[in-house]
Image 1 (cartoon, one colour):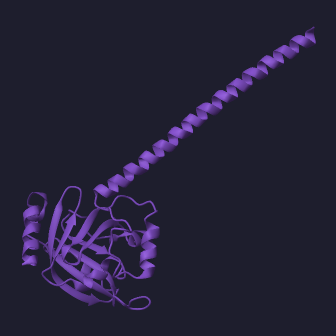
Image 2 (cartoon, rainbow, N blue to C red; image 1 turned 30 degrees about the horizontal axis):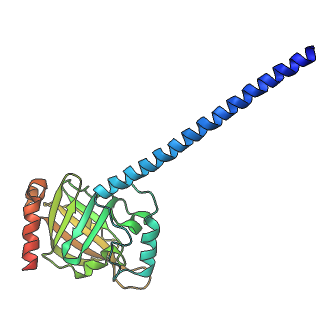
Image 3 (cartoon, helix red, strand yellow; image 1 turned 90 degrees about the vertical axis):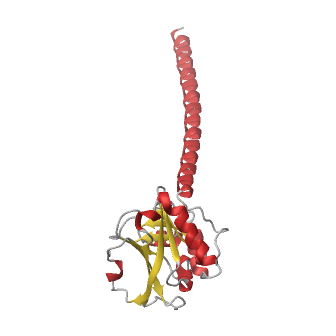
Length: 234
């Protein structure tokens, strides 16, 4: 009789354990499912944040006509990598360039877009903003840029307009091109010659100064940009 009661008690406890396990499995499944959804939604939010800042290009929206095959492959691979939202978007209407500007110049950043050179001004701050990109990718179009052409830099808050006032070639060791002057400016840096096989020995520098100071910021950017574009189309 005692053995029978022990068996009943054992079966009862075993049944409870099985029910508890089933409940835990179901709860775990629900939690993991929600976690996957939250992860997906968070990824979408990050992607939308990048898009809203202007980094909305993909492999189908860029003209790769001037790009090297190696750079195209590197860019497509970088699309799947995680990056912080860009600081700004750099545009040069004359050559059809629009590229996100990230903070830094490591390999991933330069494969994905352009990068702010450490130690230079941040977009929207007074000073000289140094921006680098590859000569066989986004910045190959710089070879068609001339003095007087316009450069636009847009952040989430402001839109700044610059005009190119100097283009020259320097040695890699010449960092004087990144020094700040009396006027806010942007300096674009890429390797040179553009079609050099191997590591290019020089640097191609495009320097542009801000147009009309704070008139190029949010309140006046539309009219200033439209004016320059109108001048270039006439």
